[in-house]
Every structure is written in C-alpha cells, then in structure tokens.
Amino acid sequence: MSPVITRIAIERFRGIEKGEVTGLLPLTVLVGSNGSGKSTVLDALLIGASHSPGDAIGRAVQRREELARGARWLFWRAGGEAVLETTDDHGLVRKSTLTIGRTVSAELTGRLHDAPGPYAQIDCQIRIGPPHALVSRTAFGTNNAYAFTVGPRPLAPARPKKGRPLPLRSSARAKQRETEAMEALRNSPEIRFVEPRPGAKHTSFHNLYTQVVQEGKYDDALAVAKAIVRDLSRIEILTPDDMPMVHLVFSDYAIPLAAAGDGIKCLLRLAFELATRKGGLVLIEEPEVHQHPGAIRQSAEAIVATVRRGVQVVLSTHSLELIDAILASSDPDDLERLCVMRLKLDRGALQSTRTGGSDVAFERSQIDQDLR
Amino acid sequence: MKDVPRSVVLCEGFDDRAFLAGWLLFLGCTDPGNQGSGLRKKVFDPNGTEVSVGHHAWNSKSGSFVKVMPCHGDDQVLRMLDVELPRRFSERLDRVVVCLDDDGHGVEGRRAAIDQRVLKAGGPTVPDRSGDWILDGGTVVSAVIWQCDDANSPGIPAKQTLERLVCAALCGAHGLRGGAVDAWLHGRPAPAPDADHKAFCWSHMAGWYADHGCASFFQEVWREAAVRSELEHRLRSAGAWQVVSTLAE
Image 1: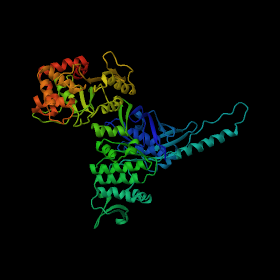
Image 2: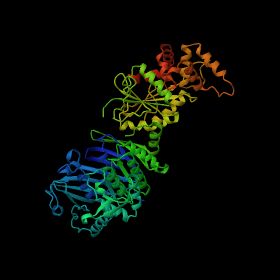
Image 3: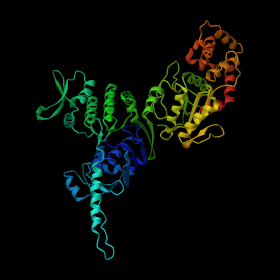
Image 4: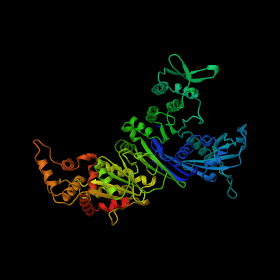
C-alpha cells in the first residue's frame, strides 16, 4: 500500500499566498467556486509530492500553454520563493522550496535544443526527513519547453579548522545522505495528472492503450467504453497509413477514437489512465468535462474502483452529478476513504472545510444540500 | 460570488418549514423565487449554488439571504449543525438558527445538545446573555425550541412540540374549537390509535383550514390576526420571537 498524502501546506505559490489543506483521504474531492484555488492545490500536489519534481514543475507550467514565459507565474505575484510541504500517513514530511532565476545552467541550456530562450530556471530544493536535501532544476524556453535534472544539493565548501585537515568521514557521511535522499525521492509516490479535456497536453491514446493491455486491464477499459458507446465490440490499435491509432471497432466498421465525440474521448482517457495505475497518486481536473450524466456515472465507478486498488485520487469538480455518482458507487468502506474539501481563496489566504464521506452521503441523500 | 450576509435555519421537517414561511413573511421577508401568478424561478444562494427544491430561500428586509433547511428529524438537525458550522471558514455564515421540538428533552436538554455541537466546532463554552453562541468569525448560533407553557386543556396535545404551540394558539384565539377537536378525537369508533400531537393538529386543519391542504396549514395560521397574536405571545415568552425577528431584519 503506497503512502497517502494527508496534508499540503502552500506558501507563495500561484494564487495562494498562504494556506494548507489537511485531512486528505484516499479519495478527496475538491470543490469551490472559480478562483478558489482548486487547480493550484492540484499543481502543488503534483510538484510537492512528485518523485520527479523537475519534470512536475515543467508539466505544471505547460498546463497553461497560452501563457508565454509561464514559469514565473508559478510564484505568487510572479516572483520570490514558493514553499510546498506535504505530509503522508506514515508521518513523512517533505518540504520543497522553489526559486526562479534568469541564470540557466549550461547542462540544461544544451538540453533545451531548439527552444527559444532559455529564459528562466526554477530550482527546487527538496528536504525529505530532517537530514536530506536535493535540488531539482528545471530550465524553460520562452515557449515553456523545458528540461530538468535532479541531484544532491551542492554543499558549501567545508573549511578546515585551524591547523587541522578535513576529517574524511564528513564527505563519506555527506555521500551517504545524498544516497538516502535520492532513495527517498525515488520512493515517493508516482503521480499522474489527468486532465481529460481535449486540447490539454496528453499521453497519446495508443501509448495509453498499450499500457492498459500490458497491465491486463483491457477488459475493464472496454467495459467502461461499452457502457457508453452503443454496439461497440472492441477497442484496437489499427494502422491506417502506417500510423498506429486506437480505433473503436463495431461489427462491420471501425472509427478512430480521435474521430469520436469529446465526451467519449474524455471518458476513455480517464478510464485508460485510471486502469494503468497500480499505486501512487492520481490528480484529476474536472473529470466531468464534456460528459453526459451516464458517462459521469461510468467515470465515478472507475474512480471508486481505482481507489479500492490502493491508488490515492484527488480530483476537482464543479459537478454535483459526479459527487452523487461517486456516492452511488460507494459502499460504507468507500465512504470511510472519501472526503469533500471545500476551498475558498480570500486575498491569497487559502481556507478549506472538510466533510467526511458519511456526512457527504447524509447531506446529499437526506438534506439535498448542494455541496459545491 | 456576492458578499451578502447568509443565514441558515435548520429545522426538523416540512411542517416547521411551512410555519417558518408564514412567520418570516409576516416579519417582512420576501420569497426570491416567487414570480407572481403561481410561477416560480430557481433561486441561488450568494455563492451561486442553486437552492434545492426542499429548501426555502428568503430575503430579509435588509437583503440578507436566509435558507430554511428541513433535516427530517431532530438527530439530523444536530448532525447538520455539526457539518454546517465548520463551513464558516470557507463560506460566509452569519447566523445559524436551530429549531427543535422540546419533545420531552426540555429546553435545557435541547440547548445542552446544541452547546455540545458549538463547543466541538470551536465555539464558546457558554452562550452570551441573549442565549446565543457567538463563534470566531462572527457566526451566531441561536436556538428556537418549540414548546408552550399552556395548561393541558381540550384541543391541545400534551407533548411539547410545534404542533402543541400551534394548537394552543388556535384554541387561544378560538375558544370553542378545542372542545370540538377533543369531542371528535374521543368520538372515533374503536379501535382508534392514540390521539398524538399530529392527530390534534390535523384535526384543527381538517375543521378550519382544509381548503389550503396539509402542506400549507402551518403557514396559513399566520394569516389570521387573532391566531398570530396568540402565537406571538407564546413565542415571545419562549425567546424565539427575538431570534427570528433578528433573522428577518
């Protein structure tokens, strides 16, 4: 069972000057009005808990592709230092301190290839447990293309005390700490950010499909698709014009999934993404996008089934239908693993109110309360 | 999202909701969903979320938003209080009014149950002089306990509930009705179930308010000046009048 992130504290990150969300559970639903900080909390989890923080920073910047030179907007009022601190249910605390500068390391400049720029580098100092420190570096082109690296934090050069040579064991201890820190980072949960909306940066369908088949989850994914796509017999990769493309196959014809409606694509992307997860954390932004209530119910079932497999899911939504569908798919044990977190952002101060699963069920079934 | 004062009334059921509707209308509140000619429109709270069909929304005289939520039982009123109070941090919440039948618990028993919930939500250990609990952030919690001190007499059920309060007011305004209700209830052919507080109330409804039906009986009693005066007298002595008047301001 991989650890569950239970808390994230955020300082000077995007629109949040300060705040924390505590009491996250295996299935946490973030609700709140537009501008209440839901997306920022998802980004903060993506970076603050990732086993590859340099890549996560790049992905968080690329999520807003319309924003040229987007890296600086990860910071409150576009500058200074941002701090993200996560705690998991084993008590492990991880602190990530992000800074941005215009100096880009030579190694990363070389790896940005044809990107215009580079113009900025975000350094992320990570402390996992008391003695460990690592730094990830993410360099950005002006078009938000990025390259990243991670390694031990360079230590300040040790100064020998008067007339005494440097003790050899210091460097050995430092090396051991580096190794432990890298190990701790590698053991962090794998995080997947799922943004079903068309136009978002996605893994290609055929790569996802391949993972689904490799994980032995084809039947699960097909069942979700069949519940929504009438007369569908199977899903296959076909290669028209030597291009591998996922197709929806019917009894006498097939169409590329890319040609299907946005709702079907959103649902199948979600189903494929969830089916391939074996642990770790999945972040989902508005899974209900483009979906009919029937598809929303399928999405909810897939989400609840994923959580039952030991995957932590944190999702944001504006859909009461999705919340109701999650409740309808949940048994009493599932309700123990569920909470709804209502967020509010007041001049940069993030506030949250947590409602446990059984109270969520009570409010929806007995009181007919709108929880959004 | 509008920064409009928002209050919530938690009550046991639809009869409480109807009674509060008549009371709030009398005190000058308006129904934002009423479009006239029997037409209704959807109502949204200051956060922009729709007010569910079972809830009633009101605008107070000064434009505050008031939502009346039937919770289907006393336990569920208290559970909803548990859920609602922590939300004051993520949503403006000026006032919470908790309406409960005395129902044998006594006013002090009911207030003690509310006290526990307020304390759990980080509120004060004791209410202020007016009997309200004032929590951090300024949220005020008030209790309205349905009961009346009238002696047991014909047409008035013994159990301390909203029904007893209403029956007592009706009997106070119309002295002869109580005897008629008693005579009807005692004259039923055997076997007849015990005449509980509901039986008394619906007997009053069937005798004098049937044209509007059960759903609006508790609202209709507010239309008649003599009954209203009897209600006001009892609600004032119970401290409830002040709570709901403040809500309606």
